[in-house]
Amino acid sequence: MAEDALKEVRVFRPKSLGGTLRLFTRNPGALLYAGGTEIARQAQMGSGRPLNLPQKVIYLGNVQELNRISRGQRYLDIGSVLDLSRILSIGRNVLPPVLFETLSKIATPGIRNLATLGGNISLRACRGDSLPALSVIDTQLELRTAGSTRWVEVGEFFGRGNLPDLRPGEILTRIRVPLEEWDFAVTRKVHGGSGFATTLSFAGVARFPKGSLETLHFCLGGLETPVFRMPVLEERLKSANLPMPARLIDTLSRELGDALTDQVADNPKGRYRAATSLRLFRSFLEKINIRSLDLL
Amino acid sequence: MPGNVIKLRFILNEQPVLLQAHPGARLLDVLRCDFGLKATREGCARGECGACLVLMNGVAVNSCLIPAFTLSDAEIVTIEGIHSLKSFADIRKKLPDCDVYRCGFCSSGMQVALAALLLSDPEPGKEAILQALTGNLCSCGSYRRIVNSVVERSSRKRRYGRRRVERS
Image 1 (cartoon, rainbow over the protein chains, first blue to last red):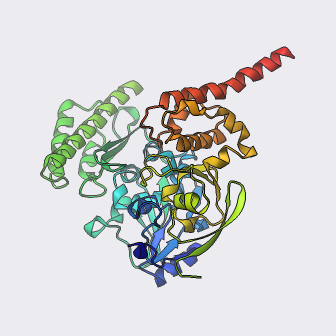
Image 2: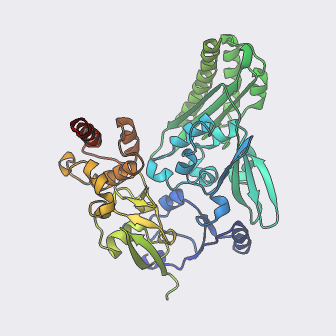
Image 3: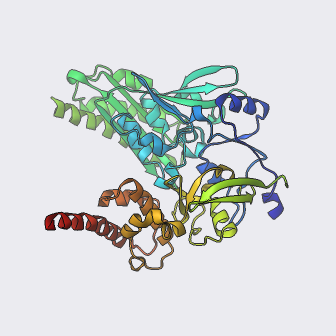
């Protein structure tokens, strides 16, 4: 076993994005390593023993293009390898509040100084963290190969088996966050497992000038689908007068409850998730009602 | 050189060092076994307890989660460095005394987390200190004593500073 742990590991350390993409095309089975917090947690082999890493590793920490953040009039472009602490240092006046609150609650300060937003989006173990907040504010993800670039919405990032739907040689390079104003935002995380595992998470944003709902987005994370949205429900709520009547909230909650039956297992844990999702949704709508009355 | 060993240069407690190690060797093991710096401790090996915290490029990180291949040109300061380097003299004055801790197992990690905070905020309030310690577990429950000690020591400088101005 000691010999297995000392197997040969070849580490590539590209300094440019172009070099990284060419390397990854030539070595498609290589592990892309940025902050590596979740990878290292799973690769522990015990005291005094090296991490159990694959034969080829591409270390992204020196790639300048992935470590940048740039701000335009309408967007914030965040490099996929930027650590969470550096993203948070931009401040809650620049980062959308729902994203700032979400990122500041991920893990611990030590982990946030290493963990990256790209890793948090991509890894299954982190699914419940940033995805709902990123989804509700219509974040886009840039995916690049050596010869192509495309942008996808957060919900489109996942394909079969709920794994990232990446083409050969493709990596996540930037996260584009729209800088829009919202009248109300909420984010909640429910822990049920060991360590930092998120059982369920919720994010919601709303805009309601002049006493009626102009736009409302909500998203649940940690369910069967990595990013669970209900555009039909969101559309129904558009132009709803505020405060929303209790009957409307009850009807929408029932519809959400029906949709959630495919998203949770038919066991006590699944039923808990469904019930908590409904509570979070109702609470979101009720808080919008209260907030709209405050603004009148 | 064998295929499973790499050579790395980095700065350790303000001294340039050369390391030969497996690429996946944990920084925690490098510090304890290769450099004999045993005050950085292993607790959970999952980044949850904070016992293994060190400063890397000025911020606190869990050394159990850092493989050797990421250390090239990094600046690492361990708890030994915090307690001996001139550059940390001001910070040392604000760290809790050892009698604040009970069994002491968490103390290294706590001191590193506090040093990281004091680097960016020389006079932190209670909330900031609590936030900085969210990644440190203490089974003995010394949190309140630690926080109160740092608050008191950080604000002592403010009181003494004012007194000097009044006298002159």
